[in-house]
Length: 218
Image (cartoon, rainbow, N blue to C red; front, side, top):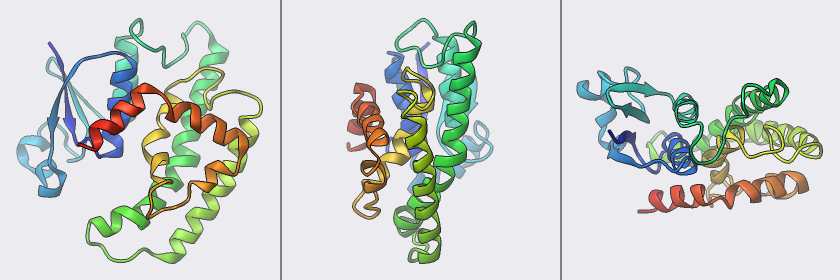
């Protein structure tokens, strides 16, 4: 049975899963959920995803939600297909560095970049008013500080999760891409740090991400 992905191609969390599907070379059926009309809050969807958000993956009746969890599930089930996105469990040190990188993304990147993008882009799209300039200033400074640490890490290894491209890197792509959005205009935070810039250019050039962006622009 073909994997079914419920989501919205423009959603950053959906893009995370779509990029993983392309990296693994997996075919899937895309089932759009119109977030603007509130379809994710309808009873029929809430039966599948009780928090009423996207994405949601249906694997022959097995339902799993939360984008990072879905990506890990796909990697575990299709380990021998496409790109290896988590190091083999037999290499404990490499696996540990990967887990460290995955934790870094959610703790020190997404936790500040997502609210920053919310203030500058999503808040207005949702009709929630103008950006809170104090919050924008705080999260911009915090992200800059955290990327200074990324710069140090990336002088010692090629990717955030080690010396190979993994989910720890892939997870950054959807929200990181918004730093270059005209309403955010903070791509310099990446470009001013040479090792961060080199890392970003490598991961953003992957075909899987280009395909995900192409779908989002449709």
